[in-house]
Length: 264
Image (tube, rainbow, N blue to C red; front, side, top):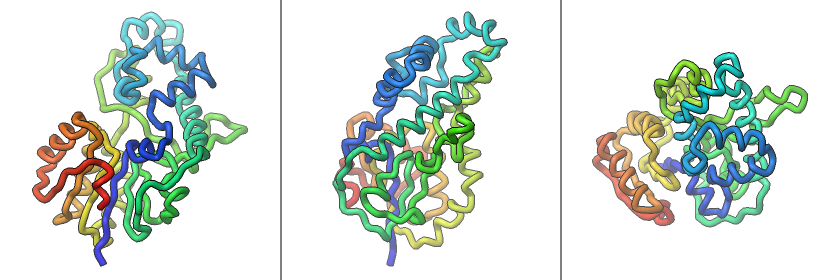
């Protein structure tokens, strides 16, 4: 029997009333580590930072960094990335324990490709982990070792596209790059096995279709030749970006529907 591959983004968790937007992370950070929150707000445009956190990480305020650089021997805020990771893991741990109720009928025999750090699929829908690929990591496997706070069992992938930065912020910006090519290479075993799973349809929901994530879609398309695509969108901006995906990827067989209708 043919199966579906369901690609899910943060909109899936948001549909379940999980407060998983980056602005929610900003609120959490403001309460739990105001010093880090304040530093981030100084280095980046505070409004842009919490609206598009990953993109903002690649665009620090160069004037502020230039002023701070001598204080940190050329490496601006050397602990910033570890601290972001630490609080990101703790925040996801909180989300994984917030109340949740199922909203959709999901087939346990289907396969899931998740961009989310949360355990919504296993906790709420009892999907077996062997049917889920958390391409950017999952909070449950990225707990902080209490004796060595900066040792993580698994790093949660977060970041922006490669950009050319000034020397005094290059190290910081490099630490927050999302190297999709390396991630795909490190997961070749998974991608190479997709065409053995008898998948006939790829359904996408909860995605914002950012430029940096299109590489994963291209790899999936390469492995699942002939599969039909069904794209979901939440708003007009998502819809425009998904049509850009379709054009760039050269997908011929597809449907477009509002998010909640994609699964059916």
